[in-house]
Length: 157
Image (cartoon, rainbow, N blue to C red; front, side, top):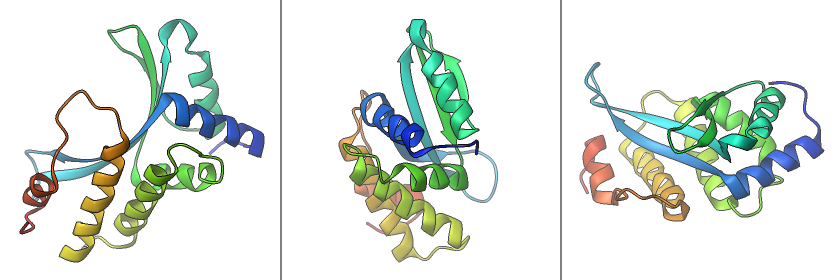
């Protein structure tokens, strides 16, 4: 990651609190042994006419990509277990409104990064984290239930 000061980190945390989201998702996949994968994302949103702060955040954090959406919005997306965990570690002291989501994401990523062969009990804790994050996110699509998430992971409800 690029060079950061606490002031920069506090600004980025505030931007995340107001115009960002944290997503921890189980995505279906057609290849490989598993029919799913875990995806984590930090996303910052801004009207496309005023997207320069997204490039500044990208430069400070040293990661991510900015894209323009069809609805006139621009977004900076950062994916990857280690990358997202490291960014959250730096932002957590400054996050105010999405603190519980950030803690849940950080906790889940710590588990995912420590062990490639998680036990069912650990997968259930990750499901709990997904539900905590999704509980506080504004989503237009239907949110998955605990039962649906457990079924995707092959866990008995």
